Image 1: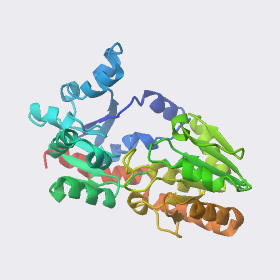
Image 2: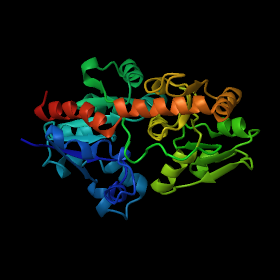
Image 3: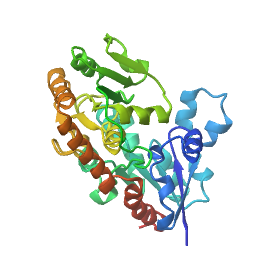
Image 4: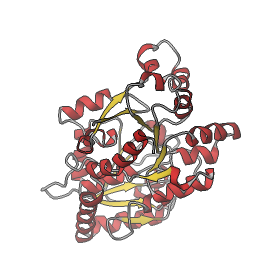
Length: 351
């Protein structure tokens, strides 16, 4: 018997699904949607009706209201899997708990730490009524339990995956190129720019302009926005070093899960990785084994690690190869599906 699961994403995935089907994009951000059939799960992306049918409403209004009718819109499925958490589990409870909702936790801990009392209470009440809360890593789970007092059995971990077939190591030599990818507000481009300013290397950052507000960008740094996935893949394949620079763990904006996808993309590409030390980063990266960790918000330490990898080709290759091996062994999309499937099946059964 097939179990039907509706994936409800924060934003439309129609274009990404079409690009993936055409071989033009990875399916990393589809969160194993395409890899569950072997577990007896038919998964499909659904979009809130308000997003499709009420474009006349202000975006902010639609953003907050669209979750309310969702349990009725997807009443034909056995479970819902979504990063949305404001009210979907509460609304599903009004339908007798059907369909059960699994919430994937990208940045809920940050909201619980910095939100108003009313915001924290509403989110906590909603998460308590989810079938499961699924975290990106053990550190995120531990913090969520501390923040909420949830029963430990209510919160699980499913490590993220990456499309290792789309992102793969190149055969040609690397360039003296450093890349940084990501637009989450927890990214620390001020520290990155300060670190690379005096270096004799080309740097490409793929960001939104908001990420660089107030930062003086030096001549050796090229800024690119919203590039095609094929171009992103090419950057990973050409670069000698990929950097995921993050603010400290107590930074009140962005997501405590910031950087995970970019780290896995770099590792899948066999690109030597430098990342700021954060609890979620340590759930995926061991210093000196498949990348280098540096203290957050420390330009000198970041510069030293980048220079070390640029100047030591053997070390860069070793870390890049180890990163690719780590992805192949633990972080493929099939691995992610294998971690999610039992949780989805248990939710659908009501257990």
